[in-house]
Length: 191
Length: 319
Image 1: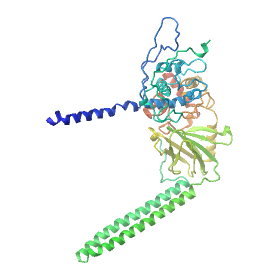
Image 2: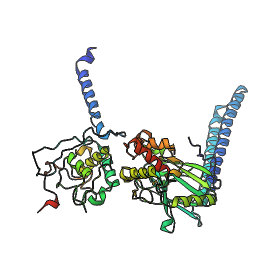
Image 3: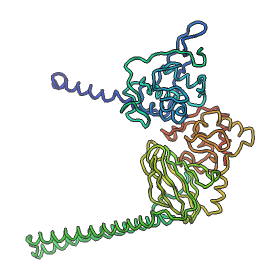
Image 4: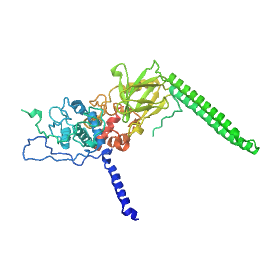
């Protein structure tokens, strides 16, 4: 009895349980939720510019439910191609639309900013996808778009992609500094 | 459920017939070998007991008998395996080459998890796209050009031919001919993801006149809405999420992510052979596809009951 309550056996047992518990910490990375309920909140007030009329209202922050989920990110990549994002933004390098794998963000890089950009559309060509893409899929696309410039945790990034890669095992160079929040006004409003 | 044929032992065409002969040959040879082996074992036991009783069994002869017995066994196995190999090669040599005359060419793209089917034609207006249900004329060789847009799939219609893999970025060819009219079920035979099991196809072999009539009905655009309900249904389809992935000929919906729905109502099944094509099944599939086929690429759709009803009426009018 004493063998199991104290002494080296107990220490080994504790170490074993803790090591075993470590194995489960990564489970959420691979979680696949097929019957998805949309997040209860959708961002309504999102600041996309340094200028704002009236009283200052701060952005309503919404946690992206998929930020750490590898499956959602690869689904995001699939949907990014399926819904035609790739037609203007290429595989992140940009073309007709701005590049997504750099650190320039006209309307902000936070998940809620990208979400509203997709839903509302933006001047000079970005169409509104409201009512066209289910909310949970928009969040998956947001996750993928953020991963292009290394804003999502490296641990949840896909090990392999069929598209342009900066180096093996990643979709973009890792970013050790926080991305610049460039709140430039839209190009059309530039002098 | 729909009753259809899916069996290697009920060949409906020359390719499957040669496979069936090969199967029966292998079965009969294996059965004979089994009976002979078991018979020899019992004979050996009986004879050894008899000779032991009569005092004839001497251990110094055992080694010689063992050597000759094992030698004979190996020789017989090699001969039988060579015969199998020769027969197999001869079947492959005579049946694999595509016949010079193949009036129908069908391009199939494997997708997670359905079969995208395009009937090739020399003129662009003769081409048309459908999904999962392939009609072929009886008594004519049909050429299939197989490819995949995501992972490796494999086309297998046991009543008509053997398996052939669909490989991304590479076109494989397969041909077969149906001699008996009927509906033959095919199945993806290479594990391709969560819904591999629900990736089925149906080959409908029919006489040439019926086949021509079917081709004529599939070639045109989808039926335009005739009344206010179908008009509303088309509006729901085009302004909602449906049009992001599906296409209907003659409408602005032209996306090729999901199956083409131009003539959905003419098909026997929905969701790649998962369910019979009825109004109720279609409604359940549109509202919550993940309940029926978890992992399928189609998202759940929150539709107002009135809109769903109109959409169903519209989809069922697409004959």
